[in-house]
Length: 375
Image 1 (tube, rainbow, N blue to C red):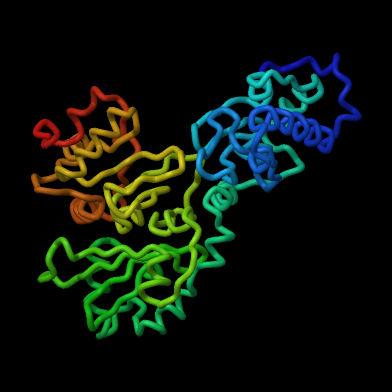
Image 2: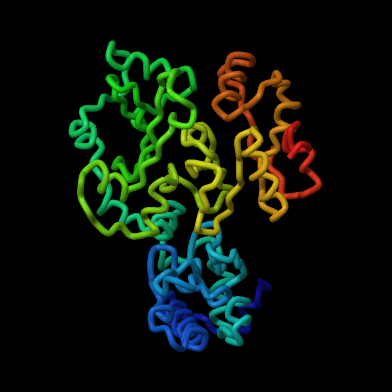
């Protein structure tokens, strides 16, 4: 935004309330024109982020009139901007209004300039925006208390005790030290990998640590609806959006302003900065955020990576990482393998700059992996 000469603008009577009233009124006019037949899409939600609205650029969800993924930011890193977490629209507030043939007053434009860092009427954090996008309040209403879940199903916390020693060694051998993310059934030799919100369970993945278990039966993922129906024998209507994110591991712990790494397995995501796990290469994430995709370095993973790269999405270049770190030849590498190898080879203090191995340039497909050329 071009700075204005404050000497020609009278802003003494233009307060925080004046600005918010102007923004709200003019946004309401835009929504009324854009969604004349939808009262739900015309509604404005005021929250800690600023104003939350149905996006007038992409018209937001075609199936759910209540979805609002457009944000007029009043504080934080993107203060003074409009951002849509569905279509990715990102523009300064004055241009947002101009795009819809609506002009801010000169006082309003000057106010945005003067308050880029923090519009004082609001305080906002990334976690609060994340909570809003993924309906954290509703998630907490349906989530299960971790300790009660443990006791009800006769599970164990991870420790080096006799009953849990096998699971303990399994996790430590994979550089997994956040034991609160796991529970264990020693009799069945099943590891519960938990997806949690504020310490409560919304989903989990079962992983057999019995080496004799067939590969196609080694993993089993439970979303929230499946937990209630199959384990608790309760029939209930879990909101569809919540049911979807209940198997997107660590979704409530991310910073939506930074690149979000998406892995196939939750144990990989636990080792990466700002990462979630989609619990499978075929899982589709329904919200548009700055996702950077890290598939496993096998044929299936590379096929998905190639597809994303052709869509100009950021994908992980396993071939480049292997070359830089001199990783030995192996049929398949994943994050656990790399972290363990680097720890043993280069020491615990060795840090991997994961983000530098992502690219959205189709010309980089040669770096996906050595098997990419055989797809």
